[in-house]
Length: 318
Ligand SMILES: C[S@@+](CC[C@H](N)C(=O)[O-])C[C@H]1O[C@@H](n2cnc3c(N)ncnc32)[C@H](O)[C@@H]1O
Image (cartoon, rainbow, N blue to C red; front, side):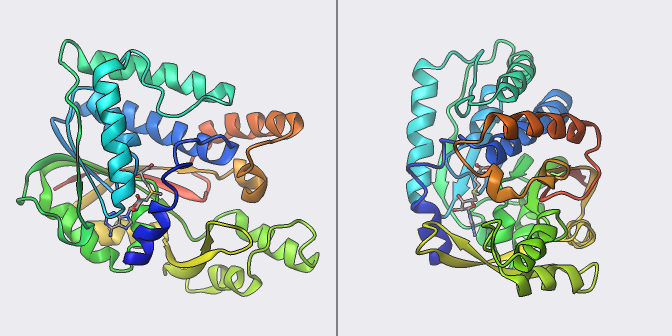
């Protein structure tokens, strides 16, 4: 577990830059889904943000009037989240939440959409600074049924080998009828196709992913999660980290075993991932790439049921 914290601590400086198409699309879509389907419909009172990182979603809920506790194992990200929360509490024009810089038009469009919902939901309530604590999802330091809503987004559970225990803890701290949102990286995604093409072309596309890992993702039993070694950090000197990639079936089942019933789900990076992720995870995309991305992203908004790299699940504790 220390390894996971070390890797995320090392991202402290650049985590919030979100200056590429891949992550800005991911967070824009995710935050809009949370705003529209959780904040607008449920106005959760007390929220726990599990794996809160630098506090993107914690700040989103707090700006909409919720009381928020964020927990994470990476102490440097927790410190960064605390500083951001203090700054927002003092200076933020809460009408413009802007969680990360808007390098692309769609970020502005999504920000406007999110801001309207957040403002309406907050009404006249003051902004309550979220509280951030160092804690592990495997052993949450909270009483049963303490929260109205559990947020666990940004692939947190992909990095937790004992994710069943994490889901148990999420179910334990959530009140009956409370809501949850979970966002995970999925096993069957369009990038797999690019692994193979690149291997056949002897790495000419520059994707540099392992052929055998791609094969494992494709041929393992259809409902089974698959563990891969994922290279993080410096391209020339990456640190490999175990990552579980989930199937929709196994996520729904594991949640169900803990009385967490999935009501809706959306994929992110399905059609946009017709472009290999390595080209989108690039801070200087060409104008042509941006234009093509714009068309695919518009289509993806409509057809969010195709398998994608990420899947957002929302539901309730029954
Ligand atoms: C990709 S970040 C997501 C952060 C934030 N939710 C967001 O969407 O920006 C994943 C986070 O999960 C945290 N994490 C990983 N394993 C964890 C664990 N066992 N308990 C708590 N947090 C964990 C990491 O430290 C990291 O901050």
